[in-house]
Image (cartoon, rainbow, N blue to C red; front, side, top):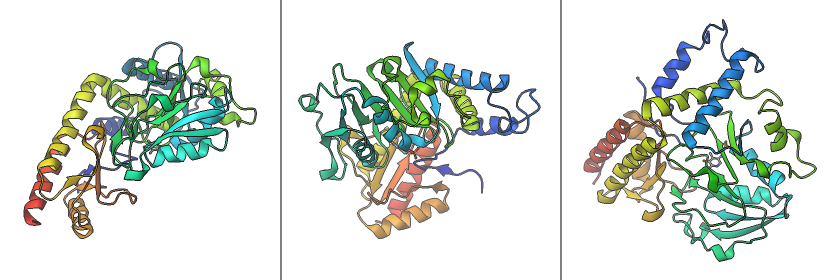
Length: 361
Ligand SMILES: *Cc1c(COP(=O)(O)O)cnc(C)c1O
């Protein structure tokens, strides 16, 4: 079997070119005589890799000066605790939008460290649409406002950011970072587990406004303290060297092969648009989400029959379209179509779905 089209929600597909480059350098990186997996994180070679990775991220996302970029471990889930430990100290309370499973987990974790005010929840409608953003419900005395920008499991997203005034906005961008341009200056903190759109699992990115550093609660573990990590350029201890290296290759691909985030956004909107258009006209498949709130990264859909859903997932896998089974909390199917999913993959999936539809009417 050749390479499949992999619609996994994460870890997810990486650009073939990046995999080939990594394979070519696996045993010897440049003229270093060693693999990136083997080298000291204090070596000149690795210093260069992590510095380039950060510079590329700054260039692609337009990260302003006055923001620190951190390369951490523990996944986005560790940030559910690190964010309140580092930011809650200000006023002891924070506002959370609960728009899916991950933001629910983030709110629950934050409540261990301060007072959490859930300003909106989409739970009543099984998160199939975004709740109204009512700025009047936001507490001007909150330490921060937390959102999950793209809801990986349910396939919805914020299309407009809440206006938080002077209160810092914190965003979990795990499943949408680098998918289109964002205005970083609107955020106090952005975090993302890298395994959706940036790199293999193992590195977590935090982009934080410098003025938010230095407020950690006294019992914050050293390893979760952003100020310590910032002062040490993410090298207080051993960073996840290999995922950082692959992240650098992905960022080079984004810049050189794709042409930057505006181009990436265009391609992603085209990919998602083609799939949603097909779901609209299909007599078998239906999208599960409210149209204006639809994610361009994660597309859940159903047939209405569990039996046909299961048959579809199975036949699709046999034809080389893998990981289409939906999350257990939604059922049905989900196509995660991150940056590295090529447009041909979407076209091939739609053709397969059309064929399946014709045979299963
Ligand atoms: C995948 C995901 C997480 C969890 O990430 P881990 O790195 O596995 O902890 C959190 N938030 C969002 C939005 C995600 O997509």
